[in-house]
Length: 125
Ligand SMILES: [Zn+2]
Image (cartoon, rainbow, N blue to C red; front, side, top):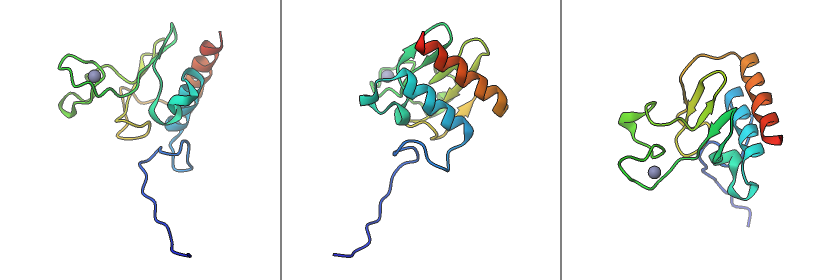
């Protein structure tokens, strides 16, 4: 019984990994703070909204007018999975945080860290 076991897992399947970008890490932390730990928020994101940020997981309902269902042709046009309201910074991902990530603006690591603190503090209020 010493066969090698090969595993294939989508990026993000097991939460944070060393291959994550700073953006992925920040999103996972915010999601973990905002989400229900039973729903694997570090992987999928969370459904959360307050004055500081909006976060929404991928939706699979398939309704034509759904703002959260993935549609390749509308990538970047549907409602973002993450919106930091004060800065207007938006992030889209496909199913899992870190997968096919798209943002609406360039952002520095320092700015990302500020967004992280801002969002996590806002959840604790
Ligand atoms: Zn949907």
